Image (cartoon, rainbow, N blue to C red):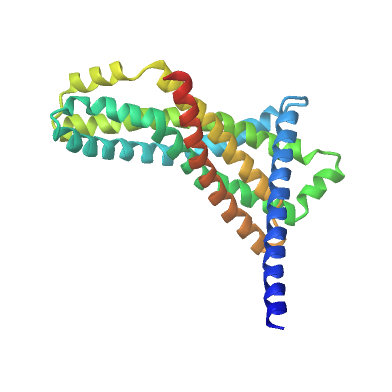
Length: 269
């Protein structure tokens, strides 16, 4: 009798795990189908440029202040830490190049995407989720308006465009913050700071950073739109979808950053 109970207990555990795994695989497949449909419709007419510009303002322009603020203080922290670390080896002249390479290659794209995800991605998911539970999506269908083309395509295009532009702003402000702290506060040589930075940074570094930012922008818009599109009903459903979108996008950005770094390093360096 005891063996039978143990057998059924393991059976329930394994069947529950299999059911959860099946749901996860189905959700992943639906997410890929969703983004393929969005990308296909973004390349075919009709094009809604007004909606794209509106989303560029919401995702890009309204994220400018937080991205610039984080970029400036990130560069300042890199200057302090870089000067302290390099001074132990008598190589403080390389502080400028360390700041620029760290920002352009890694910190700029990653932190910009995380900031946009936290500010615009969460709002995007909540907005789409509320539109779904309030039956506004069904209203669009009743008026013969494709909700994917009307709601999702402008947000995905705006995300792909906005994040690289914000990354460039992050890099510039971060380098400026590092320069101010390093030269004005820590007493580093202005000429050495700039010369080492310009000699260390190449076009390949900038290109690799922008390639990352394009993928990160796609990830933020994709996950945010999909979670809002598939959220459950009621305030609880919107809350869960928004939380899941932010966490999933953040983890995906960090994981994708590793793979992109590995691939781009082999290709370019």
